[in-house]
Image (cartoon, rainbow, N blue to C red; front, side, top):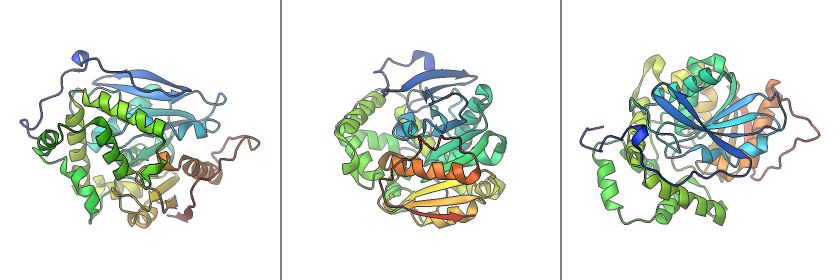
Length: 340
């Protein structure tokens, strides 16, 4: 990122006051202070004590709210936490300005080490999927199972619809984009994001849409919003070009944890064709394909994803659920295969 592209973000202790982050019923937010970073963590009280921990990692431009539809469906099998990555959601920027995949993975690892919650059932979507893959590869002791929803793993032929997002990584593009879209309302921006990320935008309820608009208005007031987006986008592009043992596909091959892969047939950001390659790369994998889903299946079809995760737990002997209370109902026809 060119030093003239965007103004540097102010220190966390001088950030402006903005509206409160949305918290749905049953959730709570807390701040975790670690050297160089402060993370906001969204959590839910589990159905009972002693359930294994789970950690959810969102994608580029997202936040811990992206997991609010899925987490309550798993209250009886895991103790859920979702993290706002540095610079996203309610977490301030990292002191060192490191938004690479490795930098985000380091933040996740440091949180898990400090909290003593590992090993966890680790979830990741998009950029969060790349981060979770790296965490599982370099710290297998921290990961019980891995669930990846449309993970941002390198593609040789990137979909045309994903190119504008990747271009955020180029110096000057963000400044140009912000000038060109200065008059766009938060509602217009949310409609654009929804059309890009959902297979069927009509599945977004009016309440969810209003909440998303409020969150967009809040984020646009943050002076570091576009900086975090641009630098994280550059981090993804850089990770795509890394070869050798540090390449994401090589690291996927090193993952020991049982892995659930979820791909949407209408995903405009991660190619549906990558599903089979991922199933071959992760040595102990299960593949769930949702033909009508887009990039955020855990938001579009949370019941289906929850059911697949429960099956992963049962398949790997990790399940602790009471059979009398289990049984999510599928809300989307799915194709599920076992690979690896």
